[in-house]
Length: 344
Image 1 (cartoon, helix red, strand yellow):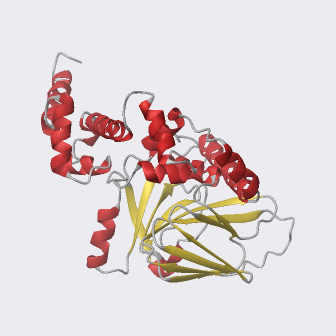
Image 2 (cartoon, rainbow, N blue to C red; image 1 turned 90 degrees about the vertical axis):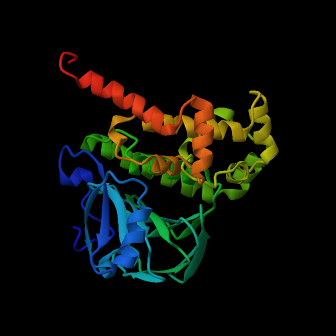
């Protein structure tokens, strides 16, 4: 699988009746160390399985590294893709056949896709849906990572651009991120199958919403209906992004920043205060987690979205009355005491 990596590989259900999902980090063999080291540094967490990708020339998008689940769910994050990549026509022409649908979403830059005489371009937080069985050309401009989902569904779908504020796309992005980070329990083929079905449903919703933009835009701007609880869920899913801002969230949901500010004011707080509180609390729980003792304090700070280590240390001590290292040391003592003879 790793040596000849295809766009589609064996699914969890096909691989075994019971197969816990784990993140798998694949790096190409035929790249120099000066390229390999930055790629390894971009891996968002270190406790993942690792394997060879083989040659990047055989990888999707000619990527130099790929992060996916093992066994495969159709989700992939492809790092350092080539400026151009082509997929060949599978020869499938039966309009009633089940179709391999590919959803692509760049983390940055621009992606232009040409298929069947059509051309679509998308940027960060947007997506393009296309038929993975038909020949297509991908042109990447300053793209460092492209996230993909490959699913099989009934019927045919032409190539379609999905805007950043599409509700189905937003939900799919959050769900896929949770799956890829191992935040959801996926310890059986049955659960993996449910995950695939759920993502397929989100893709169908995403396409349906994109096909009725006028109606949905009217509904969205007549009266914003997002609640503070929904907003906090979005914040929770995006804490690791240092650039997370009220403006970004407002743009995503098609409302003004003032609308969100009023939601927080009703609680007697501000967006900035809430964001800082959640980042500090997540860092606190990571520091007391016995499975993360090998993770440096600085790495944990960056994991929860801090870009300035001194600011993290200062605000952490103000919030918890101790430095991050002191908090970690306290819980280490508690764990060691629990493991001491006579305490079992």
